[in-house]
Amino acid sequence: MKIDIHTHLLPEKLPRFAERYGYGGFITLDHHAPCRARMLRDDGKFFREIESNCWDPVKRIEECDAHGVHVQVLSTIPVMFSYWTKPEHGADMARFLNDHLAGVVRAHPKRFVGLGTVPLQSPDLAVRELERCVKELGFSGVQIGSHVNDWNLSDPALFPFFQAASELGAAIFVHPWDMMGEAKMQKYWLPWLVGMPAEVSLAICSVIFGGVLERLPKLRFAFAHGGGSFPITLGRIQHGFEARPDLVAVDNKVPPQDYVGRFWVDSLVHDAEALRFIVRLFGQDKVALGSDYPFPLGEDRPGTLIESLRELEPAARERLLWRNALEWLGRSREDFAP
Image (cartoon, rainbow, N blue to C red):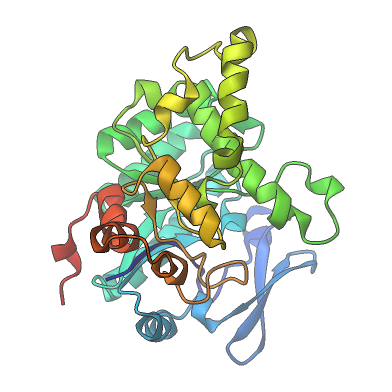
C-alpha cells in the first residue's frame, strides 16, 4: 500500500476572480491545447504549464494505479493560497476551492483524502473555514503556507488558528510559497531550488521558537520536501540556541533538538542518502511518502526512493509508504479498504 501525502489539485475551470473582486493578481487558466492548460496571472504573465492530471480525477487514478499508489492526499496549488487578497475575498476563494476538492473526494472516497485551504490573512475567517472543512466537508485537515504575508508561523495572530486545529484534531501540511529573496533569484529556477528549502526551515523554526509546538503538543504538523534545509542545518540551529539564548530563546526556552520526532516530514528529497539521513534524524515513524504529484520537481513514480533503501526492514518500509501517513491524518486503513 502507498499513501501519498503531497499532491496538488486544481479545478478545470477557475472564475475570473479579478472581475469578481475588482482588482488583479489572480491566476487564470488558458486551455490552449487538448488536456493541457497554462496557468497565467490575470495580466497574462505565464506561471506554469499543467496537464489534465492536475484537474481530472479519472486521469489521476489511472496514473496512481500505474504507480501503485492507493491513496492521494489532495491539496491546492500553493499559488492559490492568495493570502495577499482582502480577507473576505480570500475566504470566498477558499470556499470555492474547498467545495471543488470536496466533490472530488466524495466521488472517490477510497482513493482521495482532502486537505482544505483557509484565508490565514484573517485568522478568524480561517478558523471558520477550518471548522467547515473538518465538520462539513470531512477533510482530514488543511494545507497552509510557510508564512502569511509579513507573519511567520510564530506570530501570535496565528495562534488561535493553530489552537482551533489542535482542538479539532486537524492535520496541517506546511508547504513553501512566496519564497524569500525571490527578487534576487530570477534566473536558474532558484526560487524553487534555493528558496523553497529555506522557506520550509523558516516554518519549522517558527513553530519551534514561537512555542507553537510547546503550547499545542497534540497539533499534527507535516512539512514538505523532507523538512527543506532544516535537517542539515539543525546543528547550527541548536548551537545558535545555546550560544545566543538572548536572541533565540526569547519565546520558548526548550531546545530545538527536543522537537525532533514531534512532527512529520515527507520523503521528497530526491536522494537516497538524504532520505537515509532524515529517517535517522526524525525517526522511522515521522517520514511519510510525498511526491509533489503532478509537477516536474516531484517524484515520477511515488515511493521509488523509499523502496530503494534496501536496508529498511519491511515494517519500516510500510511505515514510510503508508502507516505514518495514516497516523498523521488521524485515519485508519479500513477507511480505504475496497
